[in-house]
Image (cartoon, rainbow, N blue to C red; front, side, top):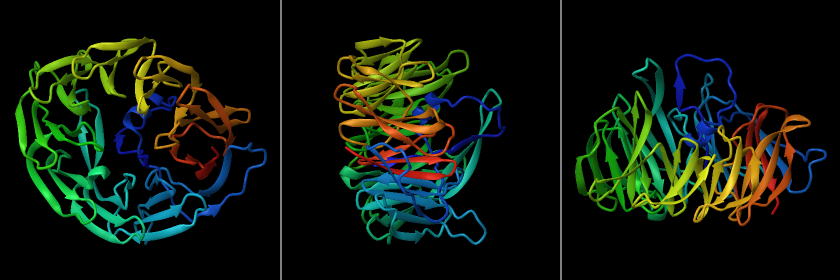
Length: 441
């Protein structure tokens, strides 16, 4: 499954133009591509070499609508912001651009991408925007999803709808639904069946800073929650029953901002005015603090943690350093034992690494990885060309050894944008539309 979202969080004041922040884009995992208008089939561009085949293009509006890829299907969510327009979710054949179905959602789409989930696709709708003031005076706006609609992926028929923001767990055939209060805080969680929406269990909760399944949505065994004052709880995923609760052993400085899985345990980040963000990994059974880092992310069977000028991979249970790479920054898992790391401070260059050993595979590649399932044995990277200026150049990086294969370039001139991939396909937003490309093996 491939999903991109852009624009869930906006600042009150528009700042001056700055270089594209690849570090932020890759961490946040990207939000709201917009799609509007009728589909037009695009012929092959003159001079495009074998390996990259233009298929079709649709006009884009980069502020309101959204797109997601899954297998051979593109899901386009049109928010209906024009007068008389109706919000709809449509499914298109990635190879031809043929529309398979289009369904009115009845409510304004929420600015999030559709969430494909096997034979079901979830559409977050009925958005509410709330604001938040930081201690430094900055003001941010967030979108809360009040309703999720489940549609049949084959026909577009509505199957069920629920109050809250539903996140699918396809292997378990369930979805976890987060319920928000007027301040955008999660105050309830419920588990429902993906196919019919039948409720399995429901939890009423104190206002949370964040929550996460453990170890992830594909293999959920438990759910961890944390409040802003550091009270954590762990619940069983299958039954929603409380397993452990208590205050985390921290000094209380700063505010808890997020929680993330770290193997069977969980990492809690909190912002400190003097020292910035600090992340602590806690044992999910005892809440004992295990180790500390600035930033923690999955890294195969290990956990990648950033430090001042480098990256380490640790045993998630003990914090023992297995390998470290000076002068690298951040890490994004792209295979069972493969990780992409930033080879420069702004992550303009990426380096493939064996996440088991820290061995560098191939040479650095310039550009941004296209998130999504992609190919089982490779990842696609895009960057603006120098001649002609601004077209997107596509490179395939072999996950076995890091070997790079140029596939071609396409599109009009423009800035770098975040593309998304599905096996055999690449979809990239440009100022003239969403370009869908075929990618040869």
